[in-house]
Amino acid sequence: MSEFERRIYNFCAGPAMLPTPVMEKAASEFLNYRRSGMSIMEVSHRGKLFEKVLDESLALLRELLSVPENYEIMFLSAGASLHFSALPLNLLQEGESADFAITGIWAKKAMEEALRFNPVKKIYDGEDHKYTEVPELDDSMINPGAAYVYITSNNTLLGSRYPNFPKLTKAPLIADMTSEILSRKIDVSQFGAIFAGAQKNIGPSGLSVLIIRKDLLGRSKRTVPVLMDYALTAKNKSMYNTPPTYSIYMSKLVFEWLKEKGGVDAIEKFNDEKAKLLYDYLDTTSFYQAPVKPSSRSVMNVVFTLQDKNLESKFLAGAEEKGLHGLEGHRLVGGLRASIYNSMPREGILALIDYMKEFEKKA
Image 1 (cartoon, rainbow, N blue to C red):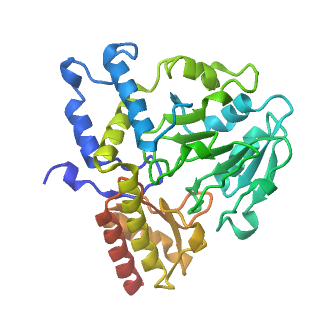
Image 2: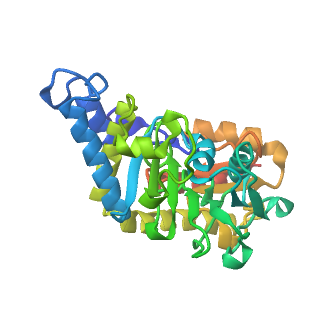
């Protein structure tokens, strides 16, 4: 058995597990990339070797998501939270507002950050029902003059998602897709912009992806800090400063792996099957409870609780012994959570279900 075959099932929400073939290829190329005598971590970001990596990464992502030509794709040297500040600075002129649908903690944080720059407004807040469902947004809910409508498409902490995205005409739809990008088919033309941190379905942390309609670049007419200036980043092809080269390289390998697996169509079917296995089991027992309304359940982050919360620490300790890592819920909400991103194999879900059944019998 190789070192790679002994890897555990990592259910962490992020940084998350990467596909084993990607890790193996990265390991084989680590010391001597393409016979250069250097690691890809060492090559110049201005050199031809990395330039090809960057170009191929962007092209693969455009292909996988069928991104139209009137959209710019760029990499930025930070996680998704950078965009909580960058979006209002780039898309809102002084005094303008945007609308926010608060379906969880990250949407709330994004709105709080935007309020530092502009008088943005809340059009939905699911706090009263503990964010266990998402709304059906439509044009009638949008405030007059809103420059955009902001959503978090999948709620990592709380295990909910939009099963269908709103089709809005009054304002561009902006989506944080950090925890589900590349996991299901989307129509990019429905959105003014999409952003995502890399550490779930793309690659290592420290990198984010932005897909934005070109006519929105430079819209605010503000002086924006250079590393948050979308127009400047686009003009410099994600290379205004030294980008996180290794994270981009790893992302390219993940994109290649996903393409070889059949693309987003194939992985969506695979993800749906995995999630169904786990939710079907949760729905057959009262020992565990899945609090999210079925129509709003996340496919990427399955949140559940134990009927007896005092058993959580014992459950987690036993899971670790079984090689089931990272099942604790987020520190802000508690409970349990299985993050089952693209890289999680079906065998990991079955192993988790077997352990849950065993734990219930022994409890």
